[in-house]
Image 1 (cartoon, rainbow, N blue to C red):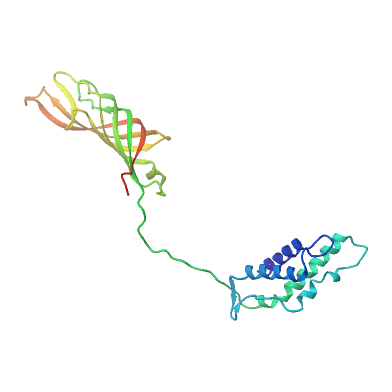
Image 2: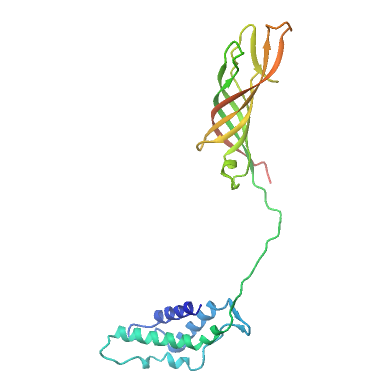
Length: 254
């Protein structure tokens, strides 16, 4: 800390001393500038007796007297100025050097913030429009797979401020394929509850607007080949696809 204080003294004196060794302002004004800067720098430090520094000793103004600058003609004016500047810095540093011999404490202000209600941020969901394929199974006679455009809604798994990047980039996707699946007179598949195949899966960000989707499709199969009239059964088949996403904010009011 003493070294930093000496450097501060040097910078202030150097800035206020002209090339010819005179002060930009009078000695008293220069002393006030120096004293104020050191007080501000050391204001956060304490010793057992109180503050670390209050003011210089009474004899310091005589040290700043430029008449004491060297008259050595073998030195240039700038060299004499530098020599005088170093002498003053040493003298000023010694004037309050005794304070550094004490145990010094740094004063800090600790503040704590209790929990308090904050304004909730707007939520959002996303609309996904994509194209994907459904694996229908090798036991489905019309076709083992089908491809169709799909429409869905995705909901983020975590806030955008989450530290886990994979959570920020992942969402839950719910939607439906809007093209009919291949069928025959004996065997067909359609959607569960609605006429279109329902999909549930995960949505993962590949690029800014392009998402990779994967999950399952809930289907209802009708099989006319069995002895049961219009035998129906639920099937869950995997799907994969790519989609484009548009975010929609839920800003209906505070």
